Length: 210
Length: 210
DNA sequence: GATGGTTGTAATCATTTGATTACCAAACTC
DNA sequence: GAGTTTGGTAATCAAATGATTACAACCATC
Image (cartoon, rainbow over all chains, first blue to last red):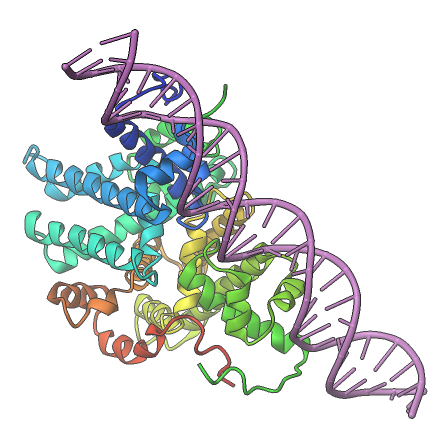
């Protein structure tokens, strides 16, 4: 998480591109599509603002790429889980796979922001399509019934919201929060608590600190 | 787009205030906090832009009021359900209550946007607090266990996302969407389909419904 | 029927921000 | 090592937007 800034100044475009999308994922996840600025993304990626817009054309296209990559990771993660050790029940494998995505808060929160922008003429259709892709994977590749799939999705959406609202921030001060989170992330709370403190810092700070 | 303007030109402040909050709920629900402009809200309320910012101080405070009123309605709705006919099981009563809120898309979507903005220094805490209020109601007033409460919330969050992503827009063209929505809104799909077409229009249209 | 408070607007400002342009420099190639 | 491609920035622009100010119309009540 500290290795971004000291990279070589000049970098092949693809590599830089991936870096920017990564940074953008975090920024969009924190601030939302409209709330994020191309400059925030640029700073987080350690690059100049004009560079990010020239590389992606528009902020909208950048967001679409972030959305696309997030979905890609989610689907890949699920496919891995489906293909994994059949000794442990499938639903649990999927749950764990989803839970692991949690460590990169940006991915799931960017998705959530996209899912709330269905009214947008270009983000809306993309988000719908992406959501359906996930549903279809659960049905067709994981072999779930409609009820199983929606139950699983429901749990995921709640996890996203708990993540998005940064419930962890009140974990120590509010016993209700502890109870709630234990119920949302059964058995996994210790992991989430140890991996997330680093993420509590506001998005931009660690990025351009020269 | 014609019904707003014909109201009386002059109005007691409280009434106008409620009208603006109502319009703002729809606008914020559609565009998100950062994506919505005070001018959009003003237009939707049939009032001038400076008026809305003078009445609420800042856009942020307006959003906080929207958030507050949305939570108020949600909680009130649940309390009504809790106090209602004990012949039908409580969880079903609550589900129906939640479902009815669906008809005012703005309420639930404004909540969702707030829930995704936990990183914001002022919206974040308010959203956390609101979410916890809902959880506590389910636990303390509805008497649910932690597991029951989170299950119920999970279903709600999925419903919100399906609503936010405007899944209905693809209802006629995609059979998968039909299956998904039937699973998310069991037995109630006919209602949602008949009540929402009017809502498909861009934000502004209704807002002053006597 | 003046007076003063309330409801509202038009005009305008200062910032923010996505985007553009012009330019620079590293690296590969010959 | 000259020339070209590629990776990158500084400076700047135009539009959008939240906020402010000054002013106008309504309405009570004395």
